[in-house]
Length: 98
Image 1: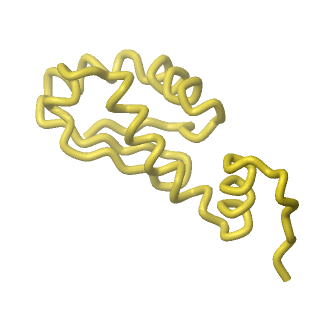
Image 2 (image 1 turned 180 degrees about the vertical axis):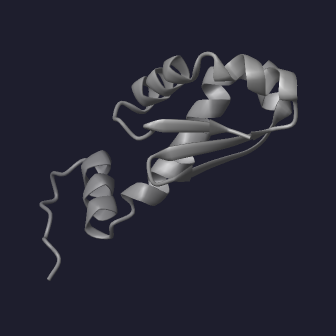
């Protein structure tokens, strides 16, 4: 049976409880990671970004520019750290650029 919340709970608390109770964290992480990628990489990289997919703890990013893919591959660990910092939790452990 669902836990009854008091009337004094904030909306943020109620939403967090709902997400946890219905096991929606992973789906929310997928959306949050895609948004974080767009915010952190800026318009230059987003122009060449075709797809951002989170599977487990691996983030797959499909790019249309081989030059950009090579350039970003040198800073994979920094990108992972920046994404996790933006999300305020460790969601991405590996980055695969395609």
